[in-house]
Amino acid sequence: MTPLPIAVLGSGKGSNFRSILDASRHDGLAVTTVLVASDDPNAGILDLARNASIPTFLVRETRWRTRLSEATEQSLADEIAASGARLVVLAGFMRLLKGPLLRAFTGRIINIHPSLLPAFPGLEAWRQALEARATTTGCTVHLVDEGMDTGRILDQLEVPVLPEDSAETLHARIQQAEHRLYPSVLARIAADGLP
Ligand code: GRF
Image 1 (cartoon, protein in one colour):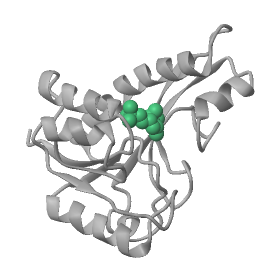
Image 2: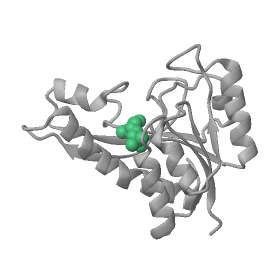
Image 3: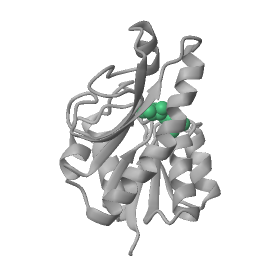
């Protein structure tokens, strides 16, 4: 099977990206990362990409913190289109997409979120779950639309909330689940396409 070319966008340490890279190297996941983009020059995800000789792109946005200007989002969309990516994989990208990238890749952008959506959208979903005294939470892979964590759900994994959990221990357990869920959803998309 020809590997599906993907672009990965992240703002953080890139542990989800690492799980995708590992699965494509060792577990037969039929995707190839053709671009990694970040809005933070110090993000670990960029180091992971450079170490794997994958092209990187720095999104420069100083005007907004949680979104991108029309021009900046357009430059990102152009870069992704030029990379040949067929799917955009958000892995901890801390900006809402509103314009050019959403339009250029409608229905071909996916995200991973650390809760069982529609519960606990938005920031620090694991902390929200603790504060709500939920006994179960998890993670969700979904299609991206204009809303915040509102797109069609592709798959979810449940994670128990333990009585002794802190925000850190719960987040770590959810991330372990994310590292299984994202590669498995990508394998399905690579084989069958998107819904
Ligand atoms: C993940 O927990 C994901 O759910 C959220 O951002 C985090 C990214 O972590 N959207 P990492 O950079 O992949 O380690």
